[in-house]
View (tube, rainbow, N blue to C red):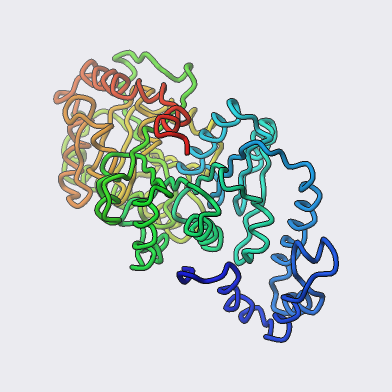
Length: 459
């Protein structure tokens, strides 16, 4: 974090030292520039040579590209308010998809040309969508100095800024925080999608006492507004930051109307369970689900298979990481052909997979809402849900599904037994549960991020 009262470039010393840039080259950088390009980037051939030798030439090239691009844009920059969104990599997971929805709403009202998205990377189909909206997509560069970031963002004090997730690059977050503290930026939003328990893994520096104090002060002074996706998460961050003004934003669950399925009792003759999410950090609980199904088979099913519906278990976003390999190997040994595995795929394909299932499982160790659960609810899924954040919004125990305890495999297995047992739950009863899921989640299809932020005052 930036030391209080430090100049914008003071803490670049550590980065430059790691890059092999000695004090002599730093002194050269601070000399008066002789032309516009040097003024914009303050970089010398000697500095570039040393950066190249240390294997980070890619960052230097990106910085130089940023400088050239934004020098050209200086004269054409509109005096209209600009809307700047800073994110971690834009992929097919929940937080980036929510951000893209936010940007789309802003683009329709304020025009894409006034919007800038800065992220380390973005999926090709998502980048095409942004370009169709006229949004300028820029590369976030790890370790990029404040001089370049200032040039890249070109902030005016009244611009709208939203940081998405705590996992954005430190240098961009620190830049925004400094600009807020010094009054160069009047206000910013921070949309945090991470459960508090994730912070030690995702970004332990967030829990640093100085960062907590800095964030608290900016919130109290109404320079920073923290947004979260559920009431439970609001309570957690209110406590962590010692404030009462963290604001829950109701997520917009976007599911094409053709997926708003009116199911029949016969649609529940077999149960196809869905669990979506990457296993790489272990957070989504794939192993817990497999253990519960293993317990169900051993304790219940094998004693009298005729009592139970047939079933399949579908995992979406399985990769090649070590935990995915274990999920694949262990899962297939337990369930065989009943286990269906899919890689990460675009949202349209994911929705097709959801539509082929009729029950959704959330046994995440940490969650802030569970967007995939909500999307499945639109399709009439029975919900099997633990008490991670989002449960209050998604589960009415016994009405649209059942509570599962991810710490109790036997209890989890008993819930699976209840759903699959033909006598315990008729097809008609499961259909009614699916209908209640649709009723609970219906209003989430109408939520609008821009309207909610405007109600806050759109600072």
